[in-house]
Amino acid sequence: MSRTALNPTLASRPQFAIEIRGRKIPLGDRTLIMGVLNVTPDSFSDGGRYLAPDRAIEQGLKLAKQGADWIDVGGESTRPGSTPITAEEELARVLPVIRGLHRRRPGLAISIDTTKAAVAEQALLSGAAIINDVSGLRFDARMAEVAALHGVPLVLMHLRGRPATMQQGPFARSIWRSVGGGLAWSIQQASKSGVERSRLIIDPGLGFGKTRRQNFQILAELHRLHHFRLPILVGTSRKSFVQAIAAGEGLEPSPGKKRASYWSLAAVQAGRLPADAQRAAAVGPAQIPEGCPEEVPLALLVGDAAAVVASILSGAHIVRVHDVAGIVPAVRMADAVLASQKSKVKS
Image (cartoon, rainbow, N blue to C red):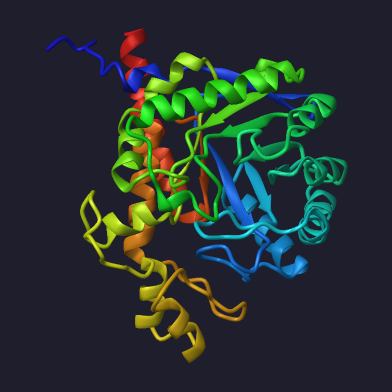
C-alpha cells in the first residue's frame, strides 16, 4: 500500500471560519467543544443540579477551565416527553447565568439554547454571542431575524415533531432524506431572513425524533452533510441511544421492554439517591436532587467518548458535551488521527 494512501472519510473534514464578537474562529483544524449548562429542573441527566444561578455560573466557569470553547446555556428541557415553558420563565432562568458568566469571563463564548426569539434576543443583549435553535427555525419565525439583526452565529438543528412526542413515532423511512430535507429548509429560511451563510452551523439532531439505529447511521455517515458546505455540530452526550449501547443493548430495542436510563440505574446502584429519587429512576430519566454529587458512571463516560470520537472522524467540527474534562482526551485523540491524514497529503 502506498504510504500516501488516505482514508477519504477521515481526510475530508472541510475547513471553515466563523466570526464571534469580531474574532474569526477557525473550524476544522481542531474540534471545538461546546460545554452543556442546563439551567432546568427536568433535563434528563442533570435537571435541577444547576438551577441556582450562582451554582450554574461556577459550573460554566469550571467547564471553560476544563477545556470548553463555548458554554451552551439552556433554560428549557428538550428531553423526550418534556413540555414547553413560557418565555418569561425561561428568561428568569438563563439571564442571571449569562450575565454572571459574561461578567466573570468577558471573552468567553456563550451560546443560548432556545427556540424562542424573545429569549434569544435578551440573551444576546446580556452577553451571549451564539444562538442554538434545536427547532431549526420551526417554532419561532422571528429567530432568524434576531440572528441577522445581531450578526451572530446560528446553529440550525434537525428535529422531527416536538420534544413532547418526538420519540413516539412514526419515524422517517429514510433518515438521510429527512435530515437533508429538514436542514435544507432551515438554511433557506435563515437566508431569506438575512442571516449570512458564513454564520450558519448545522446539527443533524441526534436523539431528536430518530430511532436508535438511525442515530448510529447518522454517526457513521455524517460526512454526507458536507455537501451543505457548512460547519457541523454534533451532540451525543448522555443520550439514550448511547446509554443503551454502553449498557449492552443492541441497535434494535427489545419490544415491550422499558429501560430506565443508564444514569439513573448507576446512581441507584451506587446508593447516591434518596428513596423518592430511586422510585423516579426506576421508571424514567434520572431526577437527581441538587445536593447529590455528580459522578458519571464509567461505562457512560466511555460510551460518550466513543460517540464523540466517531462523530469527529466522520466530519464533526464541534461537539456538544456535558463531561468536558472526561471528553477532552478523546477529542485530542480523534484530532490527532485527522492530523495524521493531513500529513500524508503533504508528504
